[in-house]
Image (spheres, rainbow, N blue to C red):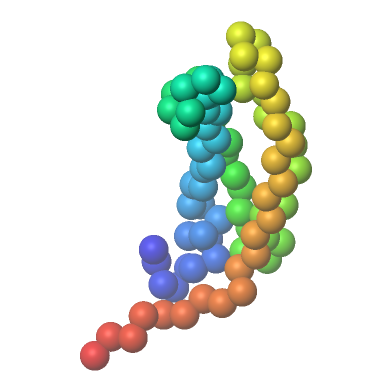
Amino acid sequence: VDSRHLKESIERAEFSLNLELWFGEQTTGNVLSLASTRTLQLNFHPGRGLHYHLPVLFDYFHLAAVSVGIHASLVALHQPYIK
């Protein structure tokens, strides 16, 4: 991160969110297996923050979809204290 250009460095940063769909049989108790995954690319802007609300369809085989809401904002940015 270039400390002289923090805003540009944060805008260039790549943020992603991995969503996983897990499956478990009612008869086997709490044994789960990973059924599907999705990766969302998120665009964060230091001044506007990050605001997403979107449906995520895992795949046609499982016919599973979720509605995801993600909100984030930058509240403080401090340089590390170095002696």
